[in-house]
Length: 465
Image (tube, rainbow, N blue to C red; front, side):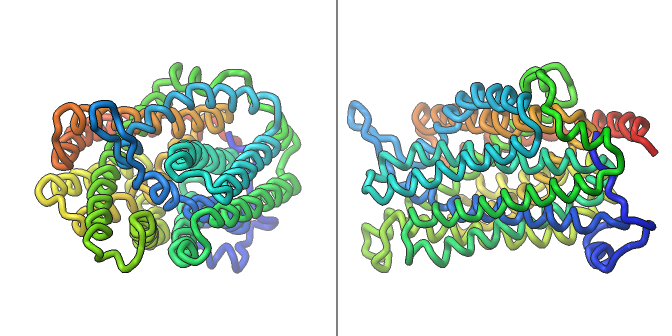
């Protein structure tokens, strides 16, 4: 249940309420908090996308020799790393839950954010000290796989805690728009600056942006504390969460388990698609450097620049979808109906990959798929937690968006081992495997849509008038 009810004195809409009402249905007094949350999301996603291309730039060129003359390439290591991350989250999620049971929500967000800021500073100094990209690439990839999921999930936990199901359904499109715009801004910053400053100074830029996020979170908390309609609701927000862990919550509630399984299926499909793009891009970059057609750029710079450009166009489409389509899809199809849009697109994308694995076509298809995933699908997934308890919004949401997300990566790693190492097949086999999983994804969406509708009705019935 949300801890505050944001209603303007007198029930009159301000100019900001009316202006933001162009994008979504905004009631009196709701615009400012939605705007501040959108700004927070903007900087969180900008911080991530500033360093997102670095994970590929540092990892994809890596080749690790194997006994017998074979080698693990960067794209293969990237796929296998998902299994390691899933294993790490088995320990990280309970530790996060224990910490969340000892502090209030503001302290939780502050300390977790500062932890990741300090990590970025450490990576910067390691890079400046000349640590080999081969040595640094794998640890940084693992770290960023933890960072991007935990920080973003925590932001949406905070938003879920502030809003009722009705408010979230109407306003999450605005909140998500800030993140979409921030992702585009972050990738643009890197696209322009990476060649001038180098890879590692981008880490300091990201750390500075995260400190802005920290200030905004504290501002929102202070504002909502002053506007709290009753003492009991604010007191609840100031208290630590219950002792039940994230995995316990997910395994005991069918609704949460369905969210977890859906997240796993979506990520399996997406990671396989990223492997297809990464492998095709790496081959192109290697061929360009070997043939003297790289324009003086290294293989790493070609990949970093290409991925930054891909991120830009993808995030531009994300902004359009988030601003003009998400709220309307929620209004006319509901949260449950919105679950079926991305799998429909995925069926078309991987059918195309199987028929024509050409880099330009793969890039276009992945831009369309990822744009829908990062806008509509991400907003839907977070909105699924609106009718849940506070413990579920922080702990179960972290479990779903970390372990279950990375479990999808882990299964993708298994698929990589079987398809590439075991069977010696190529990207078309990945596309065929994805088509099968998309069908399972649709079946999960059917069950989850029914459960969401039922739980939302029950939650609204218990909300105070």
